[in-house]
Structure formats: structure tokens, C-alpha cells
Image (tube, rainbow, N blue to C red):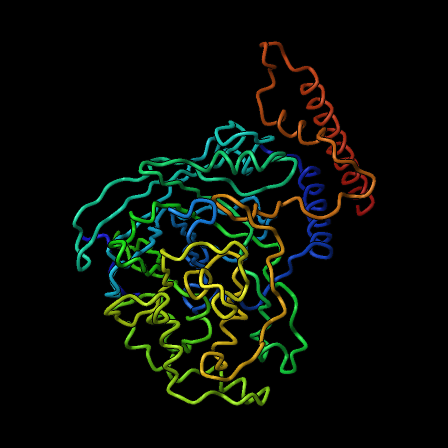
Length: 511
């Protein structure tokens, strides 16, 4: 079997339980009322009907750019699991153990991957007798208080016509940065992030873990294109949400065919193990927004399960796109003439003289000319604003792909100049200046502290101690914990006794 998958698709007292339920209900109600982000009804991340119900396998975005602080390398970032609520415990966000997360690289323009980077993950749980993700403050990735951890391997396959020529392991048992539970649980998340960045052989670097969602846009585009009157723009709908990311920085000469052919095509896929034990592709992503707003509903699931070399079946969706017609109907902006060969160049072939490889076979993928050096002053509109190091030549974290795509779809490249956009021009969190460049994930403890409290750690220390044996480190009994337990037990006995007395009196009255 080749690495390319088939295309197809201890019991507690009653009083304690009641008190806990009341407390949980009150906290949940308060959280819904006061904390963002709120529930979202649609997303560019939820691009197809089938995959929207399986977020751990759902590719959200792919980025590829020449590393700004290391221009002899290329950085590739791929994200999964849309709309991660930072406070989404107790089962926080992990990569799936039964999936293959793949990054494909086409370095000769034939629409097939000559290189395949495969990520596989394994989950480890220290204590299965607690519901907690962490049992105390976590200060390192190997901290015993980090109860649920993940590690991953990376394999590099070299392919010819989708047959394996060679393979080798690039990374083995590398730790994943955890979900950012909150300030009490992870007082120095930056340290944890740094420990998850690892140096590999051949000058490569890797990172996997949670990050702030780097995609910035107003998703109310799906409410009749921003409300039908452009009243629904300017709100970054993904603000406050996280994703799971993998980032890989590779020497550029490791992924290109030669110095004479510096253009690479990049896309990501997810394969999920089925009931028979084999893997099937369930998600695919290259350029942003293609399967979301270019492909109609009848094609979305098939696109996700198929491969770039079969993209001829979707050509009409690009040459005769729906979006300009909707813009004309709602906003009276005349749709450019068809067929839209300009969109074929941008999304399927690459722009000639910029990032189109010789003898290119049209296929949907992110194309990057690795010979173009990083811009000293990156412009959010990329190539449209004269910055050839930006989208659609690859994709940087700061590229405003929504505004770029809207302007191109409405004819910017064929004489219909426009300045359309969603009024969201930057990400809400600042990106880093060095690998992995991603902003740190939003913490689950976001929001104001409860009234009358401080940021002290007395409560978290008590929780951590309660989950450890009653004996202290020197072997002597922990009298404080024993006393607290005894007091709780006494209180429980009193409550039970009071309940029995009430029941007896009530029965006597009824008799």
C-alpha cells in the first residue's frame, strides 16, 4: 500500500452532588452571558457538509512562505480543528490518533506530489481516574501535572507517480504543545510553546500544538454577503478562537526540484482510519476559500476526497463562478465577462512570470516561488499591492486573503478595479518574528475575575494537593488534608442526619 490513501470519500454524598450541580449551572450561565466568543453559525473553516461534523480531521488553512528571518528556508503551516473555544474542557483539543495529517509538495507542476510529509499523533494519559486535563500548575511539557499529552512522528516520502521511491523519519516522538487551559494551570505558556519547537536533522525545525487562529475575516459574508447592504463588516469572527497547528521550516533546496525551477505547489489532506482499518481521505485544502465559495454544495464533499490531478472536473466552477453573479444581484456590481481565465491562473495554474511552473497542469493548490525573497515591509494585499512575496504567491500569516480574493473575483486583474473587502485587515493577535511565527493560543481563563477575588493561587494549590496522596513528600501524614477531609465528612454526616430527621417528621405528619 502506498502512503497515498484511496480517494473517496470514590462515591460522593448526595449533598455534594447537588452542590456541585448548582455551582456548575451557575458558572455555565455566567459564562454564556459574559464571555466571548459566541457560537458561530457558519465558517470558512466548515467548508463541506461531511467534514463539518468531524472537526479533528478538518483542515482549516495552509500557509507557505519564504522564512523572513531565515530566507534560505521555507516555512509551511497547516491548521486543523476550527473554532476551538479556549475554555472547551475538560476534553481539550487533541489531534486524532486514528488520522494521517499530510502535507503534499508538487515541485514540477504535474499536479502530483513528489514529496509527502506525514504527521501521526499518539495520545498519552497519566491518570485515567481523574477528569482533569492537568492536575496542577504545568511548568514544562514533561510536568507530571500535565495529565494528557501528545507526541508525533513525521515521515518524509519521496514519490513518483504516487509510488514510494524512498521514505525516512524526520521526527520521532516529538511533544505537542498543550491546549492553553488558563493562567492558573499554565502560568508561563510561552515556556511551554518554546519547549515544543524542536530542531531536526538537515537544518529543519518543527512545531505542533495549539495556536491562536491566524485567519482573520468577517464570516458574516454568508448572511447574504454581509447583510445585503454591507452593514455586517468589520468584525473578526475568529477573534478569541484557537486551532491546532503544525509548522515545519525546511531548507528550500530540500523541497524544490532545482534552482532553475523554484516554484512548489502545496496542499494538505487528512486521512481517517475506517472500520476496515484502512485510511481514506476526508479533507483537503490548498488555496483559501476555494471549496468554501467556489465549489457548489454538490461538489464540496467530492473535492475534499479527491486529488489535484483530478481537478479538471471542477473547472467550470472557476471559469463560471457563482460569487460575481451574487454580487451583481445584491450589490449591482457588474460581473466580469466569462470564461474567467484570470481565476484559472490565480487558483489553478499560478500567475505567469510569478509562480507558474513550466508545463503546469491546472490544479488547485497553494503555489510559492521560493526564489522571491521576503519583503522588508509586507503589504496585506500582497501581489495586488506590488508585494510579490505575498498571496497569491504562497500565503503569509499577515496576508489579507479575503480582500485579495474578493477584489480578484470581481475583476481586479481584468480591468475592473475595486477596493472590496470585509474591513478586517489584521489579526487580533500579533504574530511572532521567528519560527513558528504563530500567535500564542487564547487562554481558557480569559475574561474578568469573579468579584471579590484576586489572582492568587491558593485554590489551584488546594486542587493540586487534593489529587495527590495524603502523605506529604517527607512521608509524614498531611494533617491539613486529613482535617479538611474529616470536616467534609462530618458535614456530610450532618446533612444526611438532617435529611433523615426531616423525612421522619414528614412521614409522621402524613400518618
